[in-house]
Image: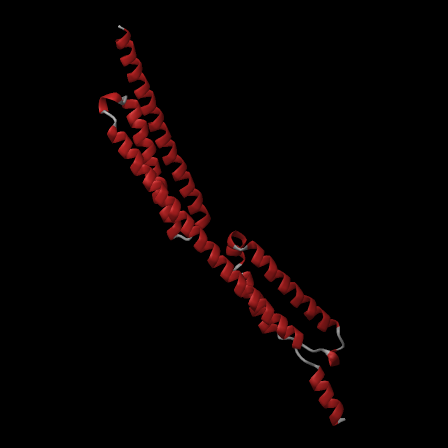
Length: 200
């Protein structure tokens, strides 16, 4: 009887429920961020959870005397490792977006400076008031977009920040294209006038 008691006690292992719940809970807590920044890594981690669940089901279906949770413990650790990878992937993608957004903001500021310089180089009398107001309004909009981009970065809304930065750059480039087209048309009109006068 003592021998049987020892065998029964050794075989009737209890599932490491607390450890399982902790591992799963840590992964679930990352779901929202991972859906945006690390979908592939999260899917891989969910695969590790599926393998853990399958092993738990296997042990639960086994005769109590023969249940063994050694593999379960290893699979819990694998879920932890996969969750570490999710955290790293999230951080890496956020860093990438932050860096790219700051780069785009820098390009936008350079485009604004270029536009302002080009406008200043045009004789004020050559620019219709309506055109000048339009450029001023567009550049003010770019400045607002840059401010919104920085606010989004501060709030760690990296995807929206990158989208806003791209929009700001596109607007700034559009202003420069408009100025270039205006200057080209102005020069062509002047040359045409010179040619007309030369012909008498």
